[in-house]
Image (cartoon, rainbow, N blue to C red):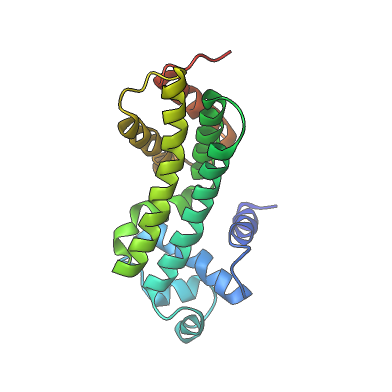
Length: 209
């Protein structure tokens, strides 16, 4: 399978819940355009052209360019929340849960780096109502991670005097993966996840085997 076919297959999998197929193609095209040109420099004509559709056809599925960004942001942030929420609710020590959370969160930002760049760095382009919905998802993700770190601080597994600050540092570290990761680079998403999990556990002073 060539690189272009691999990207197309990956896009179909990532946006599998978006239906019908035309709407999914538009979402995938919008992600590519926003990541390459930036939200404000991208036109609906750009998006429709990448999807192999006419600009008029785009409006059948999405009334505005902002609605497309909202759809993309919602799906991406819900995936991030599921990752963090599952780790927070899992059995095991705080050390195990934090390691699993960071490993999954960082690797997701590497594997889906194009989407992650859009949802993390184009957030301010959302309208007020949509912005409020997405920031609520972000706060819930923050709370899930904060609870893991707080659990570790309470049990003495972690040296984290400032739990909110530590939470922000860990989230920022993982999110930044989307900025620099390249599929042609020296590390796979899984390797990035393992590296970051180790870095974060050392950062909080966790004892690991």
